[in-house]
Image 1: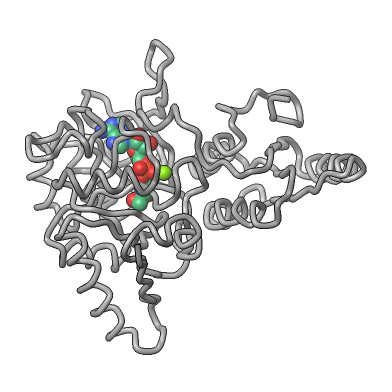
Image 2: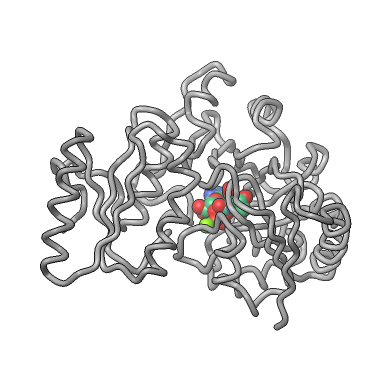
Length: 344
Ligand code: TXA
Ligand code: MG
């Protein structure tokens, strides 16, 4: 398939003309049941008409995504939400008022209009209003809610630059909108609003504390239910996996740096090539913005092993970043084994 890439980065020469042409092309693809990769403030999305089962099927096919892993439906106004869910709980309205448009996804009981292929067979639907102007424009011009997972091949790190999408999906989809770097860099917070008490299913940059403040009671992160199985179907699948093995070092910063340097020379003495990813301990914006891109760079460099340092997870944004680090390393959470949190 021929893939057309449109440069819609703000400020590039001829922006006005390019965005108009890009939106015409992308919205006609969506309206005719096809898929389009587009930027959001979190990561790039791979979108199709959420109410068109054929369009949604093409998303699963292009990504190689398991069919029981549900998609997030993207909307451009609160009015769009009414047609997607049975009813809008009061708490959902409060969160929408404060955090939309933005990186928060709410799980609600779905309406009949939403096909089961979009929700991975569930009776609930995940909905988010993105903050990126191109994403909002695409939804409006298509006149459809847009179902979109992250625009990566299933299992790979989420795409935060158009080149990541091009590497994964060129030749498989008709249109890629290049909006430059995603500002946030990790995916939205997912919160289950279907029960009396909301639960966070995936931590993100809208933190449990932010949400608790708006709702007036404590909201927790609850990734697993009481029987230990994941509450969100996506959690059980491999995520963000680079080719190399990842080891996360946790502890005092000087010790982490020293451990990493020591391990690096040991590994290199064994003939293994080593990559190091180290962010400031509390530099959450930078870590989120760059983590997935750094993982992909390490793949391009063909390193055998990646050594990285934990960020401080006593802050909600730190929890969101550590969630991605642990998943990329293929471990559930820190085992608190001293300095080295890999499962070797
Ligand atoms: O920031 C984001 O959320 C990005 C951009 C493109 O908007 N999208 C994204 O989609 O990260 P995806 O498909 O990679 O992740 C969606 C997550 C999965 O973990 C999935 O299991 C969960 O949301 N999810 C979707 N619908 C759900 C539902 N009805 N109940 C529980 N979890 C759901
Ligand atoms: Mg994803």
